[in-house]
Length: 144
Image 1 (cartoon, rainbow, N blue to C red):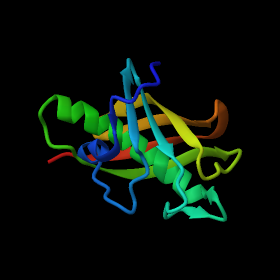
Image 2: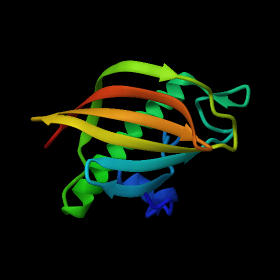
Image 3: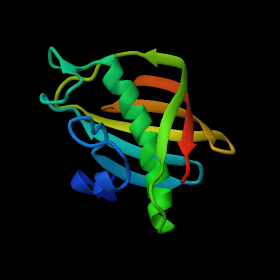
Protein backbone atom coordinates (compact mmCIF):
# COMPACT_ATOMS: atom_id res chain seq x y z
CA UNK A 1 0.00 0.00 0.00
CA UNK A 2 1.22 3.44 -0.92
CA UNK A 3 1.86 5.48 2.25
CA UNK A 4 1.05 8.78 0.50
CA UNK A 5 -2.19 10.23 1.82
CA UNK A 6 -4.71 10.92 -0.93
CA UNK A 7 -6.87 12.96 1.48
CA UNK A 8 -5.59 14.69 4.61
CA UNK A 9 -6.20 17.58 6.98
CA UNK A 10 -9.48 19.43 6.44
CA UNK A 11 -10.30 17.16 3.48
CA UNK A 12 -11.03 14.34 5.93
CA UNK A 13 -14.11 16.26 7.09
CA UNK A 14 -15.72 15.45 3.73
CA UNK A 15 -15.48 11.71 4.52
CA UNK A 16 -16.67 11.50 8.13
CA UNK A 17 -19.60 12.99 10.05
CA UNK A 18 -17.52 13.86 13.14
CA UNK A 19 -16.28 17.38 13.76
CA UNK A 20 -13.57 18.81 16.03
CA UNK A 21 -12.68 18.10 18.75
CA UNK A 22 -13.73 14.48 18.06
CA UNK A 23 -11.97 14.00 14.68
CA UNK A 24 -9.74 10.93 15.09
CA UNK A 25 -8.52 10.48 11.49
CA UNK A 26 -6.25 12.97 9.74
CA UNK A 27 -5.23 11.06 6.61
CA UNK A 28 -6.76 8.59 4.18
CA UNK A 29 -4.48 6.50 1.99
CA UNK A 30 -7.04 4.76 -0.21
CA UNK A 31 -8.73 1.44 -0.82
CA UNK A 32 -7.35 -1.79 -2.26
CA UNK A 33 -9.91 -4.55 -2.84
CA UNK A 34 -11.62 -5.05 0.56
CA UNK A 35 -9.08 -3.03 2.61
CA UNK A 36 -8.83 0.68 3.33
CA UNK A 37 -6.02 2.58 5.01
CA UNK A 38 -6.10 5.65 7.24
CA UNK A 39 -3.93 7.43 9.74
CA UNK A 40 -3.76 9.74 12.72
CA UNK A 41 -0.91 11.72 14.21
CA UNK A 42 -1.32 11.74 17.98
CA UNK A 43 -1.23 15.35 19.20
CA UNK A 44 -1.09 16.68 22.76
CA UNK A 45 -4.40 18.53 22.34
CA UNK A 46 -6.26 15.35 21.34
CA UNK A 47 -9.36 15.00 23.52
CA UNK A 48 -8.46 11.34 24.21
CA UNK A 49 -4.83 12.03 25.23
CA UNK A 50 -3.83 11.73 28.86
CA UNK A 51 -0.33 11.78 30.32
CA UNK A 52 1.14 12.04 26.81
CA UNK A 53 -0.58 8.92 25.45
CA UNK A 54 -3.68 8.22 23.39
CA UNK A 55 -6.04 6.31 25.67
CA UNK A 56 -8.13 3.23 24.83
CA UNK A 57 -11.36 5.11 23.95
CA UNK A 58 -9.37 7.19 21.46
CA UNK A 59 -8.00 4.09 19.76
CA UNK A 60 -11.51 2.61 19.47
CA UNK A 61 -12.88 5.89 18.10
CA UNK A 62 -9.97 6.06 15.64
CA UNK A 63 -10.89 2.58 14.37
CA UNK A 64 -14.57 3.53 14.01
CA UNK A 65 -13.71 6.73 12.15
CA UNK A 66 -11.27 4.84 9.92
CA UNK A 67 -14.17 2.60 8.91
CA UNK A 68 -16.34 5.71 8.43
CA UNK A 69 -13.68 7.27 6.19
CA UNK A 70 -13.81 4.17 3.99
CA UNK A 71 -17.57 4.47 3.56
CA UNK A 72 -17.31 8.24 3.09
CA UNK A 73 -14.69 7.79 0.38
CA UNK A 74 -16.88 5.29 -1.50
CA UNK A 75 -19.98 7.49 -1.23
CA UNK A 76 -18.24 10.72 -2.26
CA UNK A 77 -16.77 8.97 -5.32
CA UNK A 78 -20.33 8.01 -6.28
CA UNK A 79 -21.51 11.60 -5.75
CA UNK A 80 -23.73 10.51 -2.86
CA UNK A 81 -24.18 11.99 0.61
CA UNK A 82 -21.97 10.39 3.27
CA UNK A 83 -24.19 8.29 5.57
CA UNK A 84 -24.05 8.11 9.34
CA UNK A 85 -22.63 4.96 10.90
CA UNK A 86 -23.03 3.56 14.38
CA UNK A 87 -20.91 1.02 16.25
CA UNK A 88 -23.02 -2.08 16.81
CA UNK A 89 -20.37 -4.05 18.69
CA UNK A 90 -16.67 -4.34 19.32
CA UNK A 91 -15.27 -7.86 19.60
CA UNK A 92 -11.86 -9.41 20.14
CA UNK A 93 -10.40 -6.05 21.13
CA UNK A 94 -6.74 -6.21 22.02
CA UNK A 95 -4.76 -3.11 22.87
CA UNK A 96 -1.07 -3.91 23.15
CA UNK A 97 0.29 -0.43 23.73
CA UNK A 98 -0.87 3.17 24.03
CA UNK A 99 0.69 5.41 21.37
CA UNK A 100 2.57 8.47 22.58
CA UNK A 101 2.13 12.04 21.41
CA UNK A 102 3.91 12.49 18.09
CA UNK A 103 3.39 8.92 16.91
CA UNK A 104 1.71 8.34 13.57
CA UNK A 105 -0.94 5.63 13.51
CA UNK A 106 -1.49 3.61 10.33
CA UNK A 107 -4.73 1.66 10.34
CA UNK A 108 -5.93 -1.10 8.04
CA UNK A 109 -9.66 -1.77 7.86
CA UNK A 110 -10.64 -5.07 6.21
CA UNK A 111 -14.25 -5.75 5.30
CA UNK A 112 -15.04 -9.25 6.55
CA UNK A 113 -18.73 -9.28 5.65
CA UNK A 114 -21.46 -6.92 4.49
CA UNK A 115 -25.10 -7.85 5.01
CA UNK A 116 -27.73 -5.22 4.20
CA UNK A 117 -26.79 -2.15 6.28
CA UNK A 118 -24.39 -3.95 8.62
CA UNK A 119 -20.67 -4.22 7.93
CA UNK A 120 -18.28 -6.42 9.91
CA UNK A 121 -14.72 -5.13 9.78
CA UNK A 122 -11.39 -6.30 11.15
CA UNK A 123 -8.98 -3.55 12.14
CA UNK A 124 -5.28 -3.38 12.82
CA UNK A 125 -3.66 -0.23 14.18
CA UNK A 126 0.10 0.17 13.93
CA UNK A 127 2.51 2.82 15.15
CA UNK A 128 6.00 2.74 13.69
CA UNK A 129 5.21 -0.67 12.13
CA UNK A 130 4.40 -2.09 15.59
CA UNK A 131 0.91 -3.54 16.10
CA UNK A 132 -0.69 -1.58 18.94
CA UNK A 133 -4.35 -2.61 18.63
CA UNK A 134 -6.73 -4.88 16.77
CA UNK A 135 -10.39 -5.76 16.89
CA UNK A 136 -13.51 -6.65 14.99
CA UNK A 137 -16.31 -4.14 14.82
CA UNK A 138 -19.88 -4.32 13.55
CA UNK A 139 -21.05 -1.07 12.06
CA UNK A 140 -24.63 -0.16 11.19
CA UNK A 141 -24.93 2.26 8.26
CA UNK A 142 -27.96 4.56 8.37
CA UNK A 143 -28.82 5.20 4.73
CA UNK A 144 -31.15 8.06 3.81
